[in-house]
Image (tube, rainbow, N blue to C red; front, side):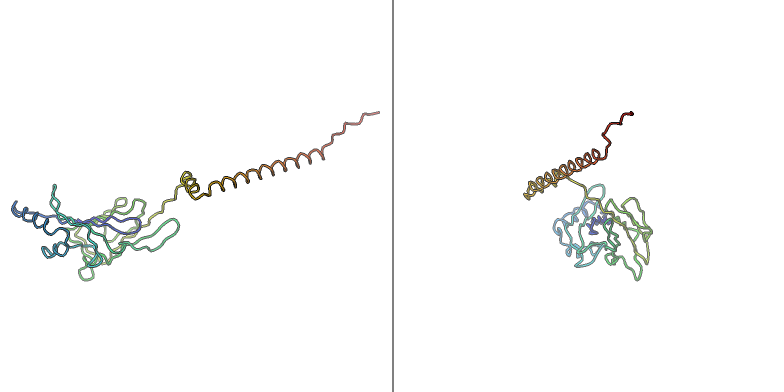
Length: 230
């Protein structure tokens, strides 16, 4: 099980689980002891069993943060790691959106000749940010639900494609934060004075316009009485 959690910048945190079976308690205890001894030493784990290596990325591309043996309903070796660069490539960006695509090079461990092959024993889960729109088709064919893509082997394809659009959030207007920042910078008193002067100028101009209108009406009104007939 490979769980890939992608952030808004296209970088990924990867959790890989190697599910294990033990014929008896002796072998289980032996593995527990080995796990405690090896710890997070990736090279030592690969010497212990070559299958215990990151499936996404290779060599210097991978930064392992944790390796541990987990026992619950299932028993598995859990490996957590990141990559030295984003898993997703920015193809296009505007003020409202960013278009991303999967970098196929990080899946080269699944290459067999010119085909990417996901074995029947492997499930890959990709969780994208919530505010995304996944472009179809996803290749190889996947189970797409909301922002989650699931590839369950066996799958073989000569095209690996996952593209999506991340819609940017509109920044919220926080009046309290703006006032607080102005106050800290010392600009708030100047802003208040400026607003007061502007309001006074508008009020003064309004009174002047009203006076002109009143004078115009007075000047053009016929205030003389109607002449009496002789």
